[in-house]
Image 1: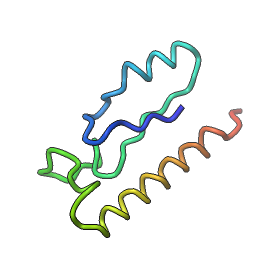
Image 2: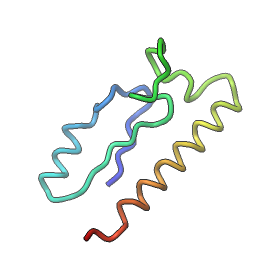
Image 3: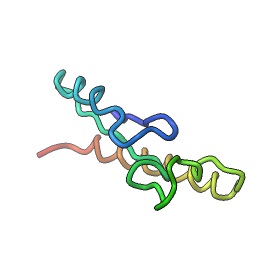
Image 4: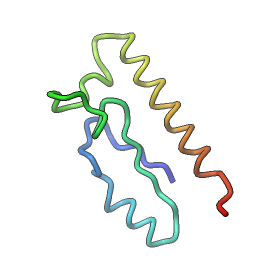
Length: 81
């Protein structure tokens, strides 16, 4: 399961949610979206760079979020040894 936190969610906002699914035996991963959590630029309190008046930056941010999510899904689908 891939968990994409809401916009400007604090780091590990869905930790309890993920732990619940782990107790059920499901693998759950919380993704830090661009400009969120540990990816927030220094000095920024909210993820105001993810969706902004700068259309180019917004498009790059959303594209990066899609690429990151697809990469995680690919990683989760790999057979475990």
